Image (cartoon, rainbow, N blue to C red; front, side):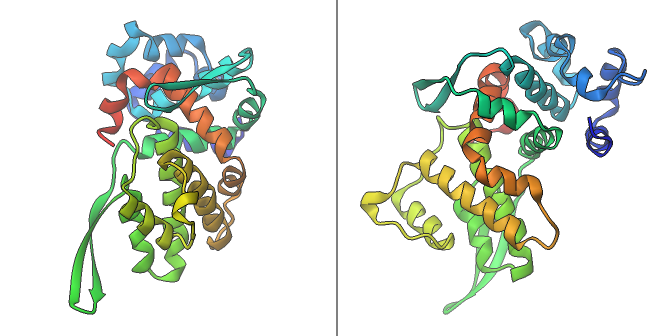
Length: 266
C-alpha cells in the first residue's frame, strides 16, 4: 500500500480499531492493506458471530474491511448479483471492471471514506434573498434537491465542493440504497434545473438511473472546477457504474443486515 494512503487509513482509526489490528500483526511490519484483506478480520467483524465486536470498533474500520474483502472475493467471482430496485436482482457477469476499480489503493480508500462520511449526516439551514424578502431553507446531505439548492447561494469557488458532495450522494444512494430511493416529479424538475440539465418529461429515467447520470455529471464538474487536482474524483466520474456496482456488492455481501443502523433512514 502506498505510504500516504496507509497514513490516511491510520488517521481515521479509533484506539479500539488499532487494538484489533494489532492482534493481527498490523504493527509488526505487516502491511496494513494485507491486514484489512485478512479473512480473520472479516470473521471478527462481519460474520454473524462477530457482530458483537462492532460495538467496540469504528464504522470506518468495518467499511475498510468490507471493501478490501470484496476486492479479494471478486478476484475469483464469475458473477455478482446486482440489487437495482425493490425486489429486483440481476446477474452481472462482467466482473472485470469492478476488480480493476478496486485494484488501486486510492480508489479503495475513496469508497471506504465515502461510506464512513454518511454515518454522520450534515444538515442545517441557509438564508436566501427572494423577491419577498429573506427565506430560510433547510438542507440535508441525504436530500439531493436541498443539497443542490446550495449551488444557488454559495460563492463560485465553493461550488466544486457542493458538486463533489452531490456526486458522493448519488453514488451512495444508488450503491447502498437503490431499493429505497425515489423522487417526486416536482423534485426531479428542480434537481434537473439546479444541475443545468434539460430533459423532456418523456425522456426522464427513473430515480436510480437519473441519479447515476447526474452523479457522473456532478463528479465531472467537481473535478474540473476544483482549485486542486482531484484525480480519483475524475476517475470515478468516468467509472461511476463500476463504482456503484462495487458499493452494491459491498452492501449485499456485508452491510445489508446493519445498513439502517449505520446510515439511518434514507
